[in-house]
Length: 217
Image 1 (cartoon, rainbow, N blue to C red):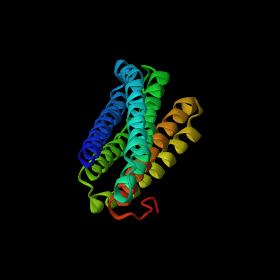
Image 2: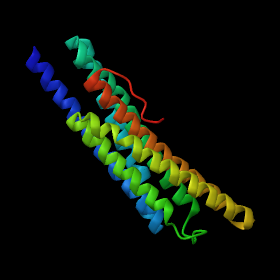
Image 3: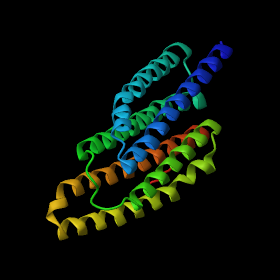
Image 4: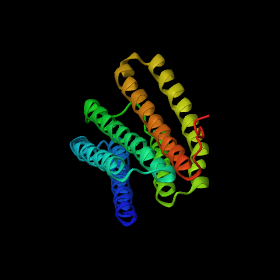
């Protein structure tokens, strides 16, 4: 019985890691698409979001099967409960990547209101957070999970910097209001991806230690 349970848990971890890798790629591509104005890549990101959604459903079914048939307790139950929350965070990150790609498509092939420097840098930071969150989950590494808090603070600083800059540009030139609003949304979506990375870190801490820590303070 225990062998079967361990086998199913390993399958669960493998599928969550697979989902995480797909989301990681989607985030990388959406930042690339925005920076390089690659609309074909943006269309692919939007189309591929259904793959992430389908995998989330598959993992949910596996979690439910584990609870219903294996009657897990203590640490095992924590892992399953946290798995539900982790795949929710991953699915939302995938949606946000697709949302950013959709904004790229709405902006279209026109030149951007300003060269993108801080926004891609912010994007690279959340890509690093995503990598850290997945590594912490795979290795059940509490200290690595906790390191996400400082990275999230850096993302928040970028968010304020970019937000203030875009508002200033919009105020000075009303012709860029529409594009400015789109870029404000992109900035917000990237910031939210960082928050979801810290949520994964919190679940890693809960799995290992059985306590709740807030990494978004």
